[in-house]
Length: 215
Image 1 (tube, rainbow, N blue to C red):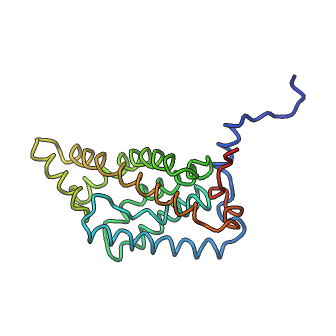
Image 2: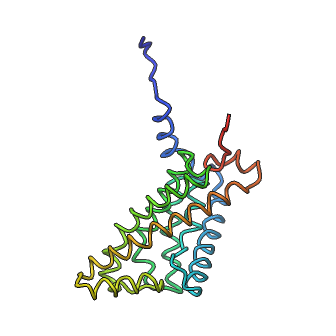
Image 3: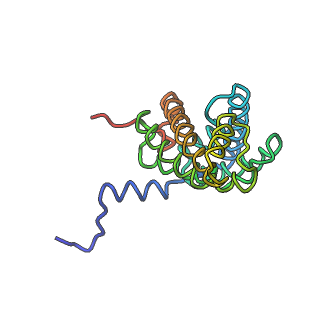
């Protein structure tokens, strides 16, 4: 019986929380310091991955962590700032601001929906984010750098696709779809593990880090 009070399903409530939970939480200094730290993590992880010639990018680790802890808006802001600052060592990064912002935003959604509380869920969600990331970044890569990136595997895949008669845009889509889902699955899985290791008082403070109720 309808009593004049709005009713929200459990799924609906989760979606509302995912989009609207605090992104700075009244702690702007903490958030600012976290953004700087996250950008440094992104740059360091990207440098390590590129130096080791690993088949992933690794440069959104800090962005995903901030998104999970502070929410979608914070994740998007962190991704954009990180890519702007990353121009210091990679002049191509600012061109991929939209990709980084989307990854951070979706990380916040994952945190709000509790998908980061189990590593296997985080990996699955990360793979899906990788598909979104690939769709956004592939045309940018084709237009800006003709598919050349610090990732050796990505560049090789583009070159291989080109030898098969594909256009540069088709080739970058192939390379992105082959690398982005793996990269984001690994990144989200790692962040899930990091979040699970945070002290208990931080789990209580950040919704995306709260331990899952197993009852």
